[in-house]
Length: 363
Image (cartoon, rainbow, N blue to C red; front, side):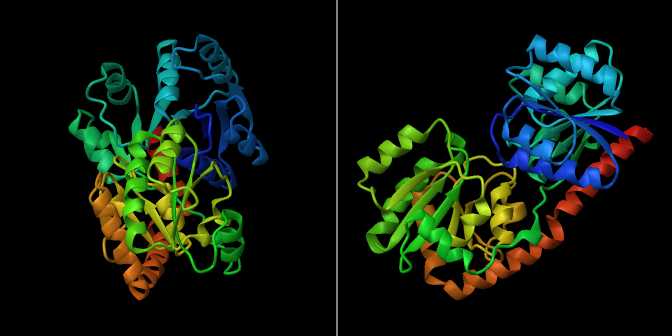
């Protein structure tokens, strides 16, 4: 079995982490793989460390003819049985490869909770040109089926988490020193791309409310993205300097997560939320918005607290509920770690993906 992976992401986000896990897991099983990735991307560098061949392309758009020509040559030399496109842009290039006469199967990953109904090209790619669409959650699967894909064409494969890399207890102190947080302060953390759908603006407003009754609270927002300047302005306008900080992108989350007293995930739209799974595996208590595939990972009242998306007030109430029930949140965190080991392991993700590949080839 030969698999060509395509990924156009320029940064290291949840999708790139999952692809890295997948490549490593399939390599251990003897699967031949090749990766076409964005030139200069963290994924291209880290995949090379796995000793899997990597071909960098610009992948600037799905109509990038230079990248398309290079991938056509790569397909001709590697002769993959399947192309697995891990984002919408690279799926467009895979579809163009098929129009040029390549006859293999196409697998498409779908990680986001956005509609494809209003985009005929996207619907054509996912509904007409793929052998299988791998949805990151049941929510995403149901959304795709509702918008016209056949039920048998879409399968759910949850993200996997490396549960063997749990941080040691002493990592908490070093993480808090790194973030400039004192021992007696309550640190609320948030990790994610700084984009509108991630809900950081309402998190900052909700944090302002939390400070009114709990002045010992601190907020660390980990991530980078187009909303950074607006969020910094909001912090200044609300007078939160010194209490809330935007750390920028940090690649070593296991060096940061132990310092959080609570992880808050305020997304307005979310396919699943891979950072939630990582926090759960590290027994970090969490509050998250009840949207998209998040309730499939976080069971309200059992493995964390859920709140209504888009409401700073609901977010603040959820955080204060967690703060006022430390024994309950500790038990939730323990149950969350156990749930991740059973339902969201890397081994499970790799096995289900390989089964999809095998099923396509048998057909």
